[in-house]
Image 1 (tube, rainbow, N blue to C red):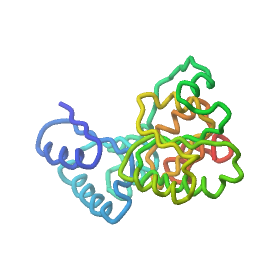
Image 2 (image 1 turned 90 degrees about the horizontal axis):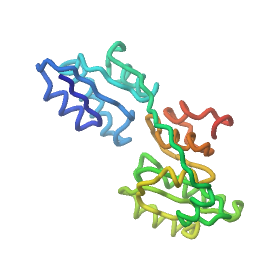
Image 3 (image 1 turned 135 degrees about the horizontal axis):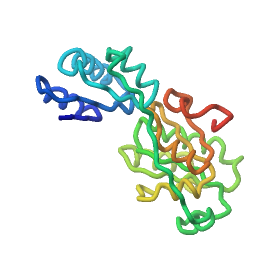
Image 4 (image 1 turned 180 degrees about the horizontal axis):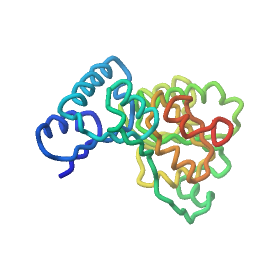
Length: 231
């Protein structure tokens, strides 16, 4: 009775598979861009054709206002088919203290801890964080940058850290089942992305009352008011 798709391959194949079938069709959009290059223009073109033909009755869930505007103005989805439903996260209670968490996670208790969580991909622009560390390391005192996540840029980012002579400040810790513990144990969260939909990790930082520094881009600036709840 209902088909719900998310992400490019699933959307395009799902729309085509449902043509002429009496189902209620939904898709969720969590980003504006896919590749952040010319390939996106081809993907946008395909989407706009599908939304005018086989998926013209599809209800599209936008995670942010930026995505809703993109759906209407670039992909030509009728406004009455767009639903703005921002990302949300559940309440969470962590019983351990910050010091207990640092001991458990092997984070020095007296170090200033900067945290990044996300895919190690072009979208997240982790190299921006590494260059910032290189520029400010002599002014920062004792600090650690913990990077949680994996991705195609992992080796490149490690090589860049060595080139910038900041490896003693940077820790690549891969993936974890308990990112919320790292959030609660850190001093600041940084998200240097070049594009976002509506970042769940920023919401998780807010939940732990952790200060946030993010790129001034749509999606992030829907969450952060500069100087009020982040920078």
